Image: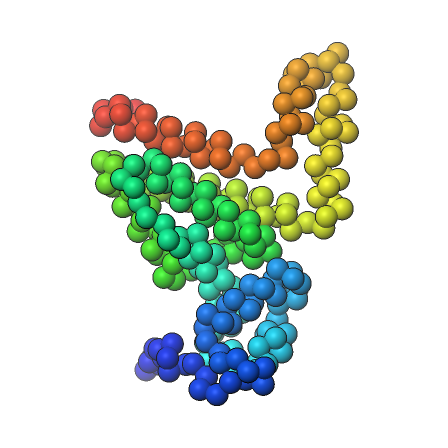
Length: 237
C-alpha cells in the first residue's frame, strides 16, 4: 500500500533546531542553494546540510527522499525565482523573450546549482507553472498545437542549454575563466591573414563579443523564425 502524502505543515518541525530555526522544505532548499554557491557541489552533503541547519541529518528525509530529490527542488526554486512577479503583456514575442531572459539570468545567479540542475526535469510546481505559461503564450498567439510543442521544445531546451553552458564558465576557478577569456586576444587576434583569412577578417569582432553569452542573439533568432512561420500561415513549409 503506498504511503500517504505528508503535507508541508505536517512535515514542518514544531520545535526550533539548535540554531534556532524551524525546519521547512523551503528553508532546506535555500540553505542547500547557499552551500552550493559557497562550496560547490562537492560541499553539499546530507551531513553538512544538517550541520548548517543545526539538525540531525536524518531529519532531512522527512522532506526529501534523498539528495537527488533535493537537487530537483533546487532547480525548481531557480525557475520560481525567474517567474516571480512575471505578468504577461499580451505581446507573445516580448513575453517569451522576457521569460527566456529571466530563466537564463536566474540560473546564472547560481552557477554551481545551474550546472547540477539545468538538464533535469523535476515536474515540481514552479517548473509546471513556467511550462503552462510558455505554452499558453504560444497557443494564445495562434500557433497550431503541433507548432506550439515544437517551438516550446526548442525554446526551453535552448534556454537551459545556454544556462548550463554559461554557468559552467562562471563556475570555473577565476584563474581558469580568465585564461579562457584571454585566448581570443592572445591567439585568435594574432593569427595572420595569410594562413587564416577568415579569422583575421573578423578578429576584432571575435575579441569584442565572444566572451559574452550568445543567448540573447540565439533567442531573437528563434523568436524571429517562429514569428515568420506564424505570419506565413498554415501552408508554410
